[in-house]
Length: 359
Image (cartoon, rainbow, N blue to C red; front, side):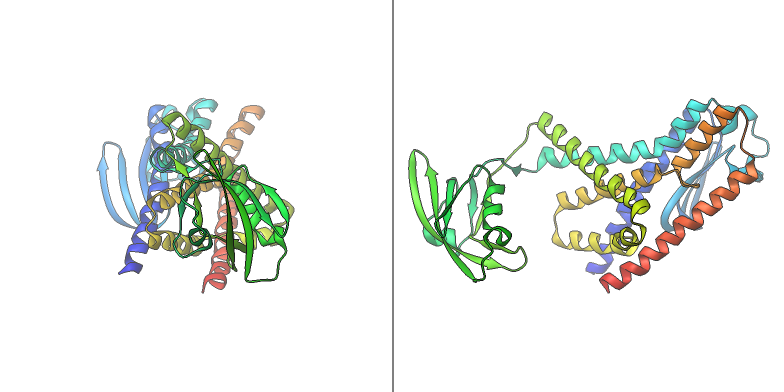
C-alpha cells in the first residue's frame, strides 16, 4: 500500500510541475493570439482528450513531460492541425518580444510555484532561532540527565580545558562535531555554562558519539519561532535563491567536469526514491520543499540553450531578430531533434546510474 501511495505522490508532484510549466506557455500564447491546437500533460498514448474552442486538451500515458502545440513551431510546420491558421496567429507572425515571453513563461511559472510553496512553508512552519536557546531536551540523554531544561541558553562549552563561546545553536553543533574535537572515544564529558532566567548555572554533561552525524550528541534541540508574513517572504526568497544557485553551479559543472557531475545527477528513479523517502516520513513541509526544489530545477534546466529546451527557442528568436531573417525550418527541426536526443540520452544515463546507486 505504501508503494502505491509513493507512486501516486511522485506522479502528482511531477504532474503539477509540468502542468504549471505548460500552463505558462499556453496562457501567454493565448494572450498574444497564437493558435494553440493541443495542450497536453504527459507524453505517449492519449488517455483523455476534450476539445474546447480551438484547443484539444489531453492527458497522455507517460508523465515525463508535456507540451503545447503552437502554430509556427518547427515541429508543427507540416501538421494538418495548423494548415489553415492565419500567419498573424503563428509564432512567426508575432513580435520577437512576445515570442520570448511565451517561451520563458513556463520557466517563470516554475519559479513562481517554487516561491509560493517556500513562502507558504515559512508562513506556517516554525523555524530555528538564530540563538543558543534550547527548545527541547530529549529524555535519557546527557543534557536531560544533567538537569538541563528547555528555555535555557547556552553561553559556553568547555571540553578538555578548552573553552568555546556560544552565540548560536550552530556554534553548539560546530563545537560538538568530531571534525572539531578529533576524539577517538564513545563519550566525552563537558562543562556547560547556562543562563536560566537571571541565573547563571554550570552543568556537567556527557555527550555520546553518533556515527551518522559524526558528532557528540547531548540530546537538545534548538528553540523555534513563528515568522511574520514579511519574514516568511524574505526567507522563502532566500531559500529559492539558494536552490537556484545550487542548480546553476551544478549545470555549470556539466561543462567543466562532465563525467563527475553527470554521475552525481539524479533522474526519474532517483527523484522517485527521494520522494518516496520524504512521503514515508510524513513531513508535508519537507514534501512541499522538495516540490519547490524540483520546480526550480526544471525551470533552470529549461533555460539552457540546448535545442528543444525553452532557452534555445529564445536564442533562435533573438538570432532571427539580429540577422533579420528566419532560420530555416529544417535546420531548426534538425537541431531540436539533436537536442532532444542529447537530453533523453542524458536521462537514460542518469537513470541507469540511479539504479546502480539505489538498488
